[in-house]
Amino acid sequence: MKQFRVLDPNLPDRSARGLCALAVMTKAPQAGRVKTRLIPPLTPEEAAELNKCFLRDTAATISSACSRRPVGDVSKIAVYTPVGAESAYNDIIPPDFSLLPQRGDKFGERLYFAVEDLFKCGFESVCLIDSDSPTVPAENFAEAVEQLSTSEDRVVLGPSDDGGYYLIGMKKPHRHLFAQIDWSTERVLNQTMERATEIGLEVKLLPTGYDVDDDASLRRLCNELLANTTSADIAPYTREFLASFVERKKL
Image (cartoon, rainbow, N blue to C red; front, side, top):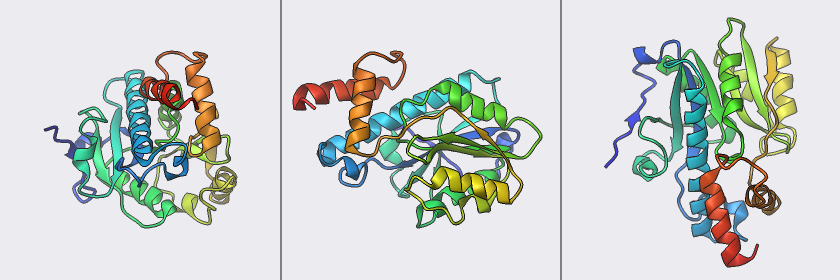
């Protein structure tokens, strides 16, 4: 059985020094607990399988982004919940990923604590990436790492076209970026940029992407991936799942 390295923020890691952590936020893909807004048209089991495909594709994209950077300046992380579900990732993410447990109750708390814990581990910079945007290309993640490789303090945001973001990157654990945010609304990106302005933090924006969390965005994803208008290396696991689903359900 695959044994992932589990990071402990209380034990700083010398090997993390100088590295940017590309960290995907993930919940163990258990039926009825993930992608519930896609039930229906998906069954709980199908929603969990789609969640696995999203995570496989995101992990592959992170790996591709790392290959575009100089060897040794990026680390691949999955920030997961719940504790005890480590084995759920055995057939989903590559073995060279490390795991970091999530902590906190509310969404904003989990994001900030993930940032804080990764900096405690010793990383030079941190990018949190959602697992709901499987079509975001590797170039975007590589650009985020590049933007954070300068000496100036800044925040990097990957906007989603629903008003949120698929990536947030920073060089220091700025808690204010997660304060007074109306999470899960179209105001998240603008409010985060306002928080950055309030503390004098420069904002760098990546190309816009989109997340898939409802029936309309699922149909958009199907149309994009199954019409073969995107490169074959974009979201291949998700593409395969959707092709089978559409064939069975005539979505």
